[in-house]
Image 1 (cartoon, each protein chain N blue to C red):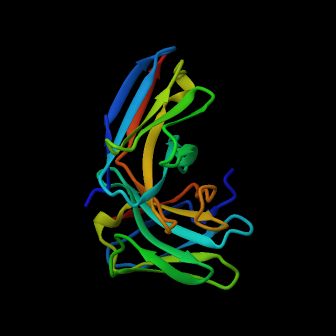
Image 2: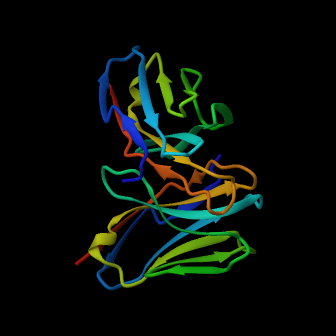
Length: 112
Length: 115
């Protein structure tokens, strides 16, 4: 049973453009919503995270927008760069637990 | 470098065999997680150990088992291997409580190919 649905599966953006990746969840018992970035041959690494009492969090060019009523959260990458080309995973975590459940991933390609 | 160490990095074995993947968590981290990544299944949570005790199970097959030792390193044992078990197996670790700052750090994975 998929806990979190991620879209799109792949994304091509021009350098300098905005990359937007979306995730939707159903369970309201989640308390933590991170995004992970994975480069080929590497393990996923935490990029940015948000908790449900905040609607937006920004770190540099990366922003998470969180819509609790719609049960959706998204990652926005501003001024996308070729170095941002990677696979991005959203994730959720049940309140009181530690393990993360990941979305299916989005392969982002930023063209120079 | 996340500080999570996994061995071996690559492993090729035959169907029906058994393998053991090893993980050393970040210094001081009490939690160890195992994930399986395959092309069609994404990142699947297998199991979570905290300070030697099993805390949560995900989509782990009965042919697979794991344990966390007193020195906090962990092993994932895969037996009666099938072609479909070919995947990248990640170990991850975290410390502290389940609060917001409990970041999970991933190793670079162990590539398992079953032939």
